[in-house]
Length: 110
Length: 110
Image (cartoon, rainbow over all chains, first blue to last red; front, side, top):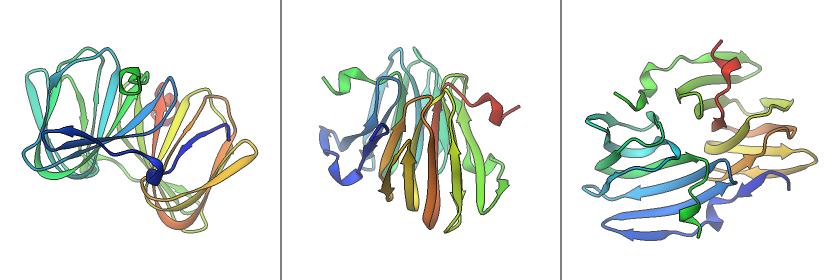
């Protein structure tokens, strides 16, 4: 079909180490959805990229930092991170984030 | 903070009628997250817009159509709809979609 459909069952679970996993969900050049799983205590190290990112909490509890400020995030909470800002997160209770990028993170699918 | 954080508790539930609701979550000009609730049997009528859209099933079951094809979507399933394509959905079991747009749907916040 002309829409890019991705069944969750057809995604691959990628073990990133350190208690984190990644599944690439549906994407095209302009928009990419990525499910990121975290064990309690696991972290996304501070990093930056030119892509605009949003994170939506599917489950669990996180402390999410952008530059020098952080916020606690619970299921249903969301954040948009403008391109180029340093961001990171720490998982306080095991769960999953839905990360969304525009444009797509081509480095994830090379 | 420099990230645009939105607590789910601080979002407004908008009744769109016909068994559908909308909550605008975090957004900036380039990326907008929107939670859309559906009662069973409710529908998103066929429409089109230049924005690229993705829909992620948070809960429930949907039949989602893009142009002349459709697919059944369950929790965790996702779809990207390129800009300009006619799309619609029918809710088969009550639930919620997370709709993501790039750029933002300015018409939602006027």
